[in-house]
Image (cartoon, rainbow, N blue to C red):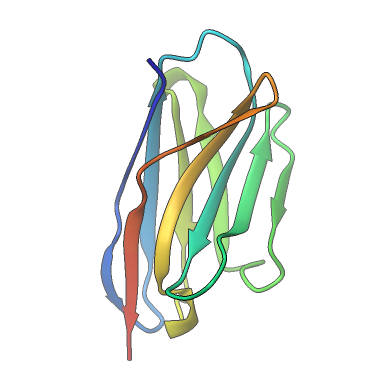
Amino acid sequence: QVQLVESGGGLVQTGGSLRLSCEYSGFVAPITTWAWYRQAPGQQRERVASITKGDVTQYAADVEGRFTISRDSAKSAVYLELSSLQQEDTAIYYCNTVALNRDFWGQGTQVTVSS
């Protein structure tokens, strides 16, 4: 059974940092892409960062230079380092993987940035 479990969200002040983790398990097919998405209240879910099997990374324009995605295959984990956080970063953050052209999602972790 495929599982993605996020952790590390919380309440942080503007300018602060957080590290989100996603541990995944149960995959029998190779994962080709790992990503982090976020969804703010009343907004559509948007991709903020991704990393491929070849460790090629991409970032949304508004997080470039502030967020860093990485993965550790030995730990079956993917991470998102968030820094210089702004109130606009407040959202539920979801871990996503793609395997055999299928998307898999975690349950999400709340990040709240206060002034």
